[in-house]
Length: 144
Image (cartoon, rainbow, N blue to C red; front, side, top):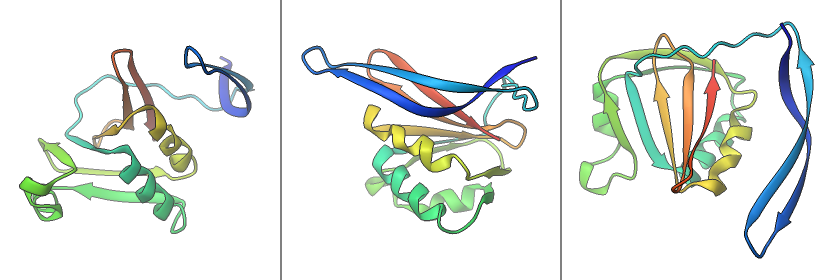
């Protein structure tokens, strides 16, 4: 089974009058790598300003190649007081996860298309980054 892999050298053209973005990407084939997206419920959903998320990603890329993390109710309550919170969190269960930071900052570059990013985490599913595109839909990235 052949699968298209990473994006190489995008060629972008803009039509300023209608604000239409067209992008042409050259993709390479990768026969060894296989990634299935499994449907399921995410235990943690974090919604935050996309610019804040981009700053966090920029800091993380200097530290390590892999992130090991866990999320629990105590952590959520200590982050920010509810009345001043810019980060909204919905937590149903304790979550532990790990993923590579190799392309993490690249995904954070999508901040210009949305004011907020939703990060969904589960112990059994890939981390999902979701940028809502106003009245159009969404752009999702899956990290495993």
